[in-house]
Figure (cartoon, rainbow, N blue to C red):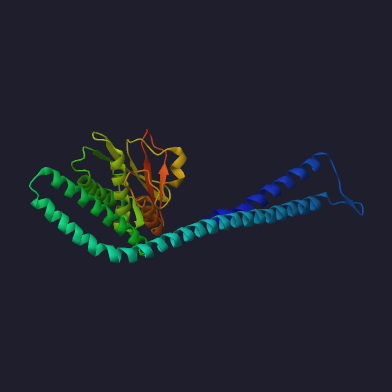
Length: 309
């Protein structure tokens, strides 16, 4: 990027020099002479004019580069400030949740054990069903508490070069067990052979598995989910696309906000945590336009540099 930026001054200089050359050529064709002490000095004057144009273009290009660099710096600073503010907010929530979880987990475990015993000893279907519903709610509270506690723990990803097909294969294996019994098909595109990303394999799989779980909740029985991988110039994109109702345009900007959810009983933490995990690896999670009516979430990760041939 710096090389491309540094070339701008030379492009400006070449353009200005060309303009000066055109200007002096036109004067020469018109027969204009520059006389000093009776001598025609048009050629030296033309050379100096072209040189002046080139120097002017060079400095004009430098000014343009400085302006572009300043703009990029301001955009980067704004993005960092936004991310820092978001991280501080999530960390505060996580710290509070951590204290609450410490007091809640033990009673929840005791309640769960007692309800499970009651369900196993119940003689009729009605109390067994009621106990099962209570167990499901206790498990949901436990998952929400664990997600909140996770926000207070700084991520320390172990970044390595990993083959994209290994990531896809691992996510596919876990996803098929997640979807088992739901009547939802998983269609997988392994992606290009030999493509590699710089990422933490465990965290990358965590994000993708979470996206698959979200897609499964939006997909009706008999539907399908696509897990795809595409290689670009400087990044690899893993996408998960469902055939559900999609995300309404008016809430697309809010889906990554903590505690924002449209699901009954949802905590609104899945996508917020996924974004933090992706950014900790130098990547990002985005909601993209799908090919149909469903939703398409994509994990962008930096592509590993390839050795020059």
